[in-house]
Length: 438
Image 1 (spheres, rainbow, N blue to C red):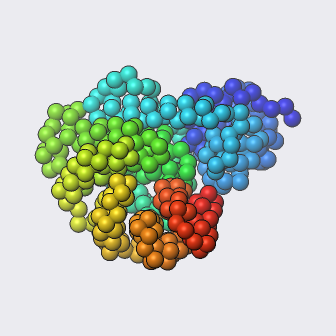
Image 2: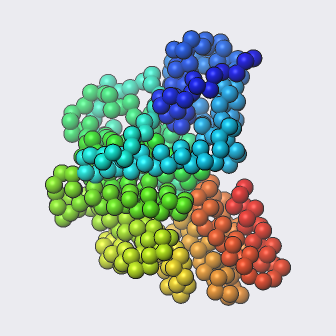
Image 3: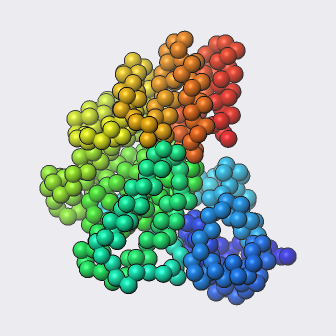
């Protein structure tokens, strides 16, 4: 069977659909180009009825093996559907991949600028996110429907905090609730739904990134939606979360831009409101401001600017007002990581010890990340306990679905172990590297 022309999949709409794993839109686009359902079914190893159901009823495809078969059958790189898991992308050089990623980062910054200050400053065209259609919709929405979206987001966030990842579950929720924006409702309910969806999109982008997938389209959609409905929390939360995914991925400068735009959104810059007025409207904003400062400190530390990093840490601790144990533990863990970046081992030890005291059993992902941090501190200090702590943390990370924890904390621990003398230490370093790349 002849291969399909790769140019069929190069348009903005098609690439957005592929990024979102929106197979229904992909198939409908191919049909508009004259490719029959029967031909699609033959290529993807599906029955014609399955193809019809995906196209007409918005049935989701979440099984990784099916997605791989679809990518192979259509003749496109698996990475375009987010299922390459580190494999080399066909016919793309590292330079081309970096250009593509740079475009996505510029699009995030452009959309955050629009949302925060009302103009894009010529930074690039925002990304789009294609979503399924054809799902049964309510006849009219009420505020209880908005509460349902928020409850689902909260539940999925809890699962993600325990195991990491959960991109597939968040994608399913996004596909279910996004079409509700077109359902009749009062202006108040529509605005509340937009805010709830902006939060859901942000969590979906975070979950994708945590699994090593591309979540940029979800962050971009969250920023656009929050900006359109003048949702201060939504703009700031999406700017912070998207920057969070970049800061330890080799792009601290781009991350810092997003954090700075988040501060602008937080201050109500676009609407001419004061910071005090904005915070009075939403009690979540002080904690979010602290998060922006914590990760601004991370960016400055990685850019070798210790004075700026120290100032941001001080601002974060002074401004945080949360009584939530998870938020307090996360803040202490982030502080420890910054101190570790700056070579302040004693300060890092104090902060990570505080984090581990605060993390409960329901936050396995965060606790494991803190355990990896503590182990690295002890190994770098040359303390005998470091090997025991490292062994425990390395075993704990096996239970997570988080690619990011492995990349950001297990890889540095492996490097610290490799720098220490001894056969046992080298073997533990080898094991850590093996798990990190699994």
